Length: 211
Image (cartoon, rainbow, N blue to C red; front, side, top):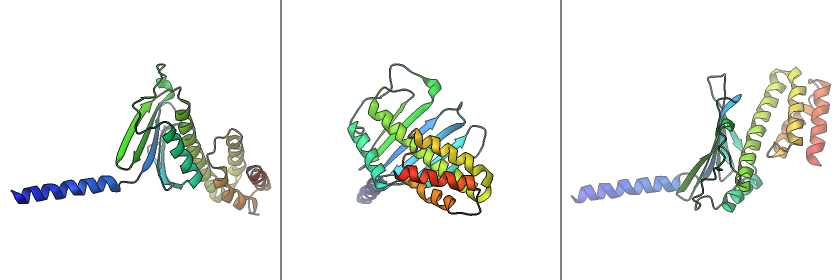
């Protein structure tokens, strides 16, 4: 009998340690089968390391990318979640007005062995919308970086278009961390093998970001 009790205690202890060892993190998911990008998931640990997964509607395979946020961005996320008292709150944040055609957002916070998950398609909560917009800015940033790197290496003629898209996103504050795109812009601006229009556009964006 004592052996069974000992085994149970060891098993319980292992499970508890495993739960406590699980990284503190934020998770954002967006799903809408009508959208060109029909699925997005961003998983961010409190140290800024994370992963982006997304899938386009007409493609079978998911794209998976690693990312690293700036400490200031992680602090901003933590502050927004703390403002909501996210782990303690029982609010569903779903507005009485349901808009399912906008897609479903899922937010998860895991911290110190505690976890909470919510789902909504429309909310009037300002802090919650700031969280969603920040995650969307992270998504835009990571995807734009990937597209710029690909165009620089394999499709030089596509670079002006990609830089124009980035310029529009920067003007609309749709890039979470503009300083994170400076390295690739500098590489483009200094690469004599690339089209002059692309190099000039990159130089212009560098100046705008550094203002």
